[in-house]
Image 1 (cartoon, rainbow over the protein chains, first blue to last red):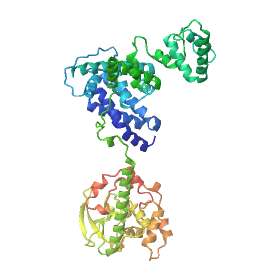
Image 2 (cartoon, rainbow over the protein chains, first blue to last red):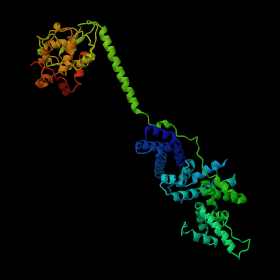
Image 3 (tube, chains in turn orange, yellow):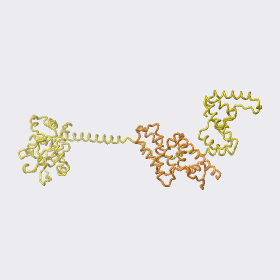
Image 4 (cartoon, rainbow over the protein chains, first blue to last red):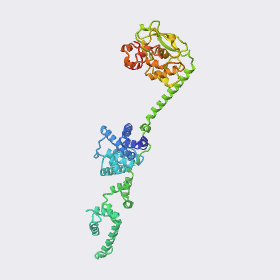
Length: 161
Length: 356
């Protein structure tokens, strides 16, 4: 990958990967650090990463850096799919998108990640599997579980508003 | 058992006998989609079966109905897989016909429609107003260009400086161009061995010719600096060579030789050359310089060359007490002397010849 292609990659994917990381960890400074770190790694490996694979490399690298951060951060729960999902909510919502954002925050990290990769970036199950080092069946299961949870969360809010 | 073109007949028979499970029905539908010719065959078998089945009444006649087949293949009887189908719909996992039947089903049953629509709201949309701040900081800029810029700038400054130096030198009269020499009123033989550091390109210019200035040396020996004028040389090669004029041990100057009045007032190096004791980095430099200086004078260069001795013949003592007296910095010779590595200094007198 040339320097020009690298800079094009920055222009094309920096915002997307930043939104993805920020949505996951809700820490702007850390999200910036992770994105910065991701592109530094990309530049170091620029000779071995082809331009056609650069998006996958960026999101995979950012995802794993984020996972490392989450694991180090005691405040975040581990990648525990069995985490109890809370449906309690006492906020006032004005529209469904706000409800959905709130619901996303309630998801276990792995489910949240696959949903964001699916919805934000339009990744296929295979691409998500490659990024998260899961298999496609696991990705499908996580997405189905997450959708079902989101539907139930939104459904209960809809009843309120 | 998987259904293939070799095994489909048993599947067809089970289908006609209505012995297929839901999963097998879904498999059969997929198989018929991929093999339309066999779908036609199944229709013919269905028709034949109808004709042969004399027990069935007309209403109960079994007809091949792929629509019904699809419906029964995707929906569980109790609709327990309805959530899965809704998610599959929004995930784009259903084919056109399956989508169509799901929509028909939800349209007909309001309680299912609500669930179906709620699933539609589970698609997250990115907030595109959130962007990475200062994206340029991530980009790689051509750092080498900056170095090149400074290189070009430095080269330009050097060239301009050189041009101005040459031009200024041409404009100054010989009386205005001055250069200083360490000297005193006593014999040089009384001094410790002293040599001079000369770099003609940096020669100090003074408007007062032959001005004497007292200089206190490293060994507290008071000397006088006698300025003599020097004419710059316009040849770049020669100037380059002159810059390599480094040192001359004090031995070169004995009382007899140290006759400044005999020195060419326009070039201090000529003073040395008259003694045949020029210090250059190489004979080539010396010859180039002399060729220019003596352009209009008849000088036998071969005689000069014969007076040059290799460095191996220099004695260590000849340079041990060397003192730097740069012509462009005669007011502060000690400071410069202490800043020069003796080993480096020794190397720089290559080609010079001490008087023993």
